[in-house]
Image (cartoon, rainbow, N blue to C red; front, side, top):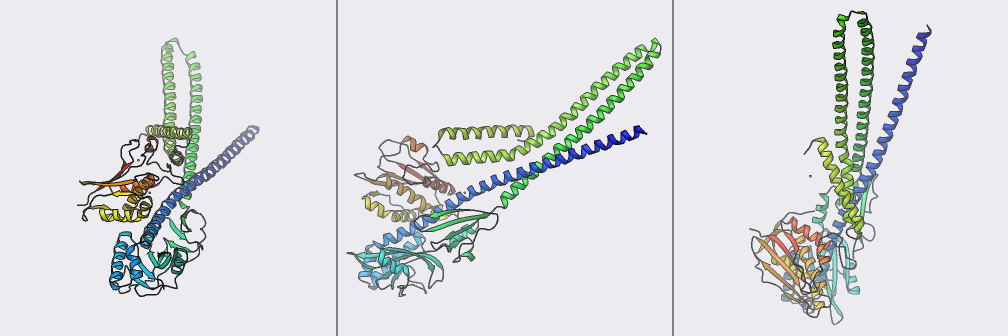
Length: 560
């Protein structure tokens, strides 16, 4: 009776121990899953915020480029002799000549409309002179961009068109002679194409004016309303638009970070269950082996006692039986070891597979860190490089263990090289005239075309000409030379006779954020090179020759 009670107490105690151990394992597993969720969510959210920051920077630069280009159009036209003549003598011939000129410039620069207002605010010439809804004859004296331009020389206003009813940015500049304002030149810019491109992205892009109201958005319904508050779980980035008083916002839901965190937590939970299952299997295997060994031990003892009682004739048979039992024990041990190795192999393969997820995160963070750091801290840069190399080594090892063997472009169209170059030269003309720079350029056939996108091709040319102009600051005999080599790939080369590039600058010429300009970002040539690659071409620098100026080659595929 007492024996039965002791056995029941022992079984109850063993059951209680198993329940306590199981509860502890579940708590540890839940804690590990929670920690994995939190770490993965923080890392994914940080990575997403950095990606949104890069996207916001790129879109802000595109918008700044458009605004800078259109401001240059208004500035250049305000100093145009034909425009001034039309205001002094508004004869039909002079007005018609200016209207046709505005029409050509509008097509080349991508403006919505260009028009000229006299001193009273009435439009006397416009790029839409031959349209039914032409601006000619309309009175715009009530517009603030007209009165502000007369007072301050230039002005901007974002508003709905009185005729087209389409929103746009109005850039105005006074046209004066001998210190007296004769009229105002106005360039209207519409952003439909830009907003359409933004709408194709997964993120929401919003631009607010100085009053905090939305003026541009990938969601047109938000326009002219106050900036909406970010939703719960949203990640956002902002960039100021230089010279405009605008702010660009890029927002995206944090669902991606949540998915990554859930995946990480699920992975940890799966691994925990896998390890727990393996542990239970091993524990049961050890129990079965111990029982089998105990049974065999009792069997051998009984057998030995029986053999001792038998005759000497059975001694040889006993020795043979004993040897067979030893071989059996050896085979059984090897079988247990083989089972352990098989289980270890499965666990190793699973661990190797799961290591790739945090390893990819480590590599991405190291790459981002090295890209953002540049060459400013060589020691840290070398350490990040070592991390990348070690990440590659770990990836190679996990691959061997598992047994397994790798940015708003628009549509390309036919673009005239001459038109694009003329537009770029027009946009940089005021700076060249101020420095008295001599320009040497080839005669380009009007039918010579390439596969590209007009705005982005002009962006490359303006950047190269602007760099050459800045390199000639203070030179006694400044000169910019443009040459063209025809073939299957058209090569447009832009050279200057400035001081040239040093070997140190040439080595990191196309490295992001590497610049020698005060206040520069070091992104102009990098972005231009990426655009050229999108066109199927390339942007390269000529050989470095001390004191011989700098040369850049733009290679583009010739259109059939």
